[in-house]
Image (cartoon, rainbow, N blue to C red; front, top):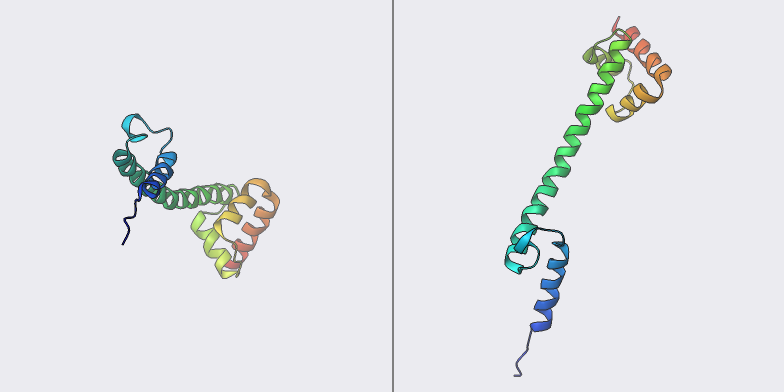
Length: 118
């Protein structure tokens, strides 16, 4: 059986990884072992960051809805509860967009929520 030299495969794999670590500091960009460790850590943080961003955005949406509801004389939880009773199924992202860009439509929603509460 003939011997297989794998230098080209390893070099290709190393170059692919080192290309991803461009811009890292010191040995983290050009020494394969350090670069791999750093890249794995960076990918873990990126994954975690994507999950955290969803949490942060939901919190922002709730804050915007709360401000809009307060302007119309309702608390956030009363507003959401009123919408549920009125069987309005808008998610918090859309409600926050309405609160910012369409205040008249948001006011109509608060009136609807007030009616369903009483």
